Length: 443
Ligand code: PLP
Image (cartoon, rainbow, N blue to C red; front, side, top):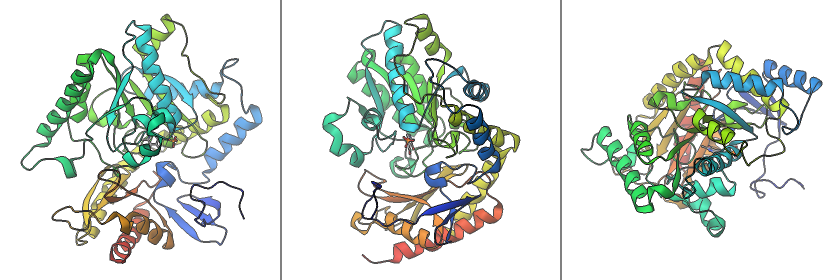
């Protein structure tokens, strides 16, 4: 009998009792290699002594001070660190408690910005199908996952969706990646013109699409062309790097690899690495200035904004990543992971695509590799991969509905940045065995 309202109350869960680097240990003593960092969260693995010490130090000094009365050194230092490493003028940090809160803050900041600069008609958001921005109502509304949105549709704010950048399925025969990027930018422009660009506040996109598509990066030039369309019509570009940011792709900000600077970026997950619940938005200077010189404040707020222990933990996570040059390890181990997945899964007829950046990698599972036809959703192949992997002591992040919210399966990997070459080899061996077992299994 449990009094915890679990995600899936009919499922019996192992009890996690201890962490040890890349491992989680349950109450029976079974060890699980955390190859997904939970949901791409645990970038430093578990029970890292440096982070736990920083948390204890901050808790002894001061656990919490409400942000309408005080600032704290932890929040100031964390904001300095992130602003110093962010591209362009993304210099202004607003700290919240997670990814959905960060996305909500981004939407409200965009809306208020346009009020401040005298463009009150801008209230609409355009995002992409097959994206995930969180489960609170604003974030769910702009999210493009049909299955997640459907039950709540009557209570969601207005949102408009265009195509994702999903080359594996949507690149047309004979079309170059460059032409594909042009086509997608034209689709956004067309939608803006249909809605009336003067009514649109922002375009929201994950830099690398995480759990919904399974680690799908944009084609080269996609974001440069999207940035140009946003600039042409004065629409803010809001990038969701809740999953792909903070080093996961080998760059602290995933958008650096695309050579553009968004107007607002949302981060979370790897910011605190799971040691504390924390998220943030970074806003460019012109947005911050418009608020400060206009009404003087952001009409928003939560009780736990810039929580002192959360900020102290995140600062220590970020300093550790920098001082131990872990982004270099993400790039090297990411390439190794990609290479081994391609080698070892080459002969599996059910592996359609392998993609990703850094230590964020996805494998799309199909029934038929030639036609890319997915498995019947009733077979729940993604769920089988998860259970086969867990049985082997491997944590992965599979999901169904890859194609349209209903059809398609993929599995995502997001191992900690501290992984060694041996760890990566072990992850690939275990994953291959789990995929083999799940795709062979009959209903
Ligand atoms: N945005 C993206 C891209 C995410 O992957 C997630 C969570 O998976 C969120 C937003 C929501 O974050 P949270 O679950 O911390 O609210």
